[in-house]
Length: 528
Image 1: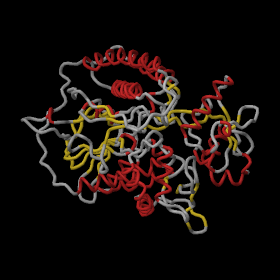
Image 2: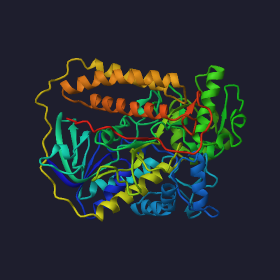
Image 3: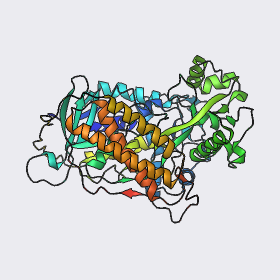
């Protein structure tokens, strides 16, 4: 048994923000599936949106967020997050994050969907700078225990403790990859900060850790999930056989990058009056349309007109990576394709990150706070991580600490070692291809029906495997991906309209009023 006051599952910006603030008065254990450096936060390039410049306002940022989110946003959550944006930036600066400055002031850039320059950044590697800064503090903190190579299996609830107890989360079971043993982590409060679910699709900008673990665990524990149909496709992922999941930042278009066909023709003005500065869902659909119309493997993003000095100063990481692949972006356009980037839905929470299960919080991409609506506005994700990481920490700190109950250890007395691991790799590949083809940028009722049927068959195969063999990382991730895929398809089939990131050829119009898709578990399955 590994007891602590707070267990945080996930080590991205949301989890680390909460850990540092909770550690002032509590013992904290942070579980990471791989090294803490492997997270979507680490890969974030653009920056963090906040009202910081002259002429900007909270109302303007709220308005841009609502427009991007197709008015499906929870307005209270949206205003809550945006009002706390400047404080989030201030907290990060006090931690030592070296934001880019110009003439002694924060340099603010602009991205698609924003009416003002309000993106604080660290060149074009903001996520890495923030993550590395916080990691140094977390690793050095005496009250924080960091355990890497630990894959959470399921949450510990009242079913795993002795006696007749009220529903509550008491920690999690997790697989220690190095020892291949399942360990029991008991905690007074548990925070899901596991990130997104991009790996459910064939092409994604997400790291390999993004397998929807938190959403799947929360659902199995009895929590509602919301808006799972809204999977954001980033318009511009580098198209190159050696460039796995490399993102070309939104800021490239914000600073004048133009999207072109292979013959050099611009096409965005024909799709939207905002052209390259339209929100991500609009740009991604336009690229998808042009690729299918012309039979293209990719389109091109051209920033060369800004000159080499500007590009080296503002986009050093992108410039260097493209050079390594033989693309000089100061002289050549960048080949790009859309790829799954962000999960707008997730475990339903309140403004403090609380879920339906007492003792369980969800923050960051795993949560559905209502901030993003039907489509996330660029650079609101890092903002959400810090704001709701702070809110969850404050909520936990204000509560009396419950006494830890005796928890039953993980039972694997009736399972054996797997003898056919090819089943896992085959099903993993089939799921991701099927989701890309049937539940992608443009959907139809027939495709969704086929996807639901195939997911059910795969779930039955994987559940049989899970019940009879010892767990391993690939099996656990596939189990969670299948659960998330089911929730995405179920949500998409319930939405009889096109809105934001969900575009249906059978339901092309937008219905009124705007309403979230909320799924309620029939009953929590008994894990383990």
